[in-house]
Length: 366
Ligand SMILES: *Cc1c(COP(=O)(O)O)cnc(C)c1O
Image (cartoon, rainbow, N blue to C red; front, top):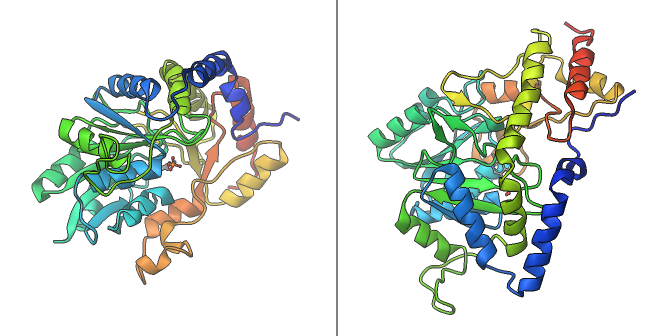
């Protein structure tokens, strides 16, 4: 019986090993380990990749969200609208910036925030929208930007799952006032440790972010803002520069695997829908099924590991539920109860994915 991991980072990173080793030798020999040429080189390359004016490296995706809100001048106590099915880091970023996360329900076909629900969640205290591109599929940014403009709101994209995804011809990170990326090892562009970045087309904003990530300082020991220690380090930047050259190939590969699922999986599994305006990069390929837990168990019995993104809705998380007392988010609950993430990594072969389809199709329930 084949053993199919959900993700095998050792295998996924194997094709990049020579470049990683060279990057390590260069950085170690340079004697310069924080905010040097490697970070600058990666920032320029990633800005060019996204088609955006500026990129600033930071320590993680979570920090990228916090620093984005701070850089935009969103005051503590302001309301920020977030999808009710977001990954907890999106919500935590809002909280750690001192703001109040207001949940709006997603569209259950795309898993992304529903612009109509978003519009309904706006109050006089709302200052910003955090548009989270879930699973590698971009939000309906054209409508979200319209709603933001007519209500005087800032827009932040959470692109942690959407490196290289496209909506209406424009890449993620290029639609809003500011965008947050994560390079956590499992992401489509993953480092060998933590890392993140912020992109923007606003030069002033980019300058402020450069201060904020480094103690609020540009010139050593001169502090213009209350800042953070949140720097992408030289070593991770060098690894990322090497891997960035293959990001399109990684995304294309994941899309090929997603295609196999789309074609071969039985229609009783609810599959992702790709809209005409979108190019999806399948950070996650999820299906929904009413007997999700039994399906997960069945696949496991056949050697296939799956994940659940995510098993518990944010408004049911012990540490967070007090933020939305008595509020109901039935769409988010439905997604959390039924979603299952299938293997869709650079480490998998097409034959392995066909095997996963064959076993899933033999699932006896429903
Ligand atoms: C991974 C992720 C983050 C957090 O990134 P870290 O680098 O782990 O801090 C934020 N938002 C979303 C949607 C993510 O998937």
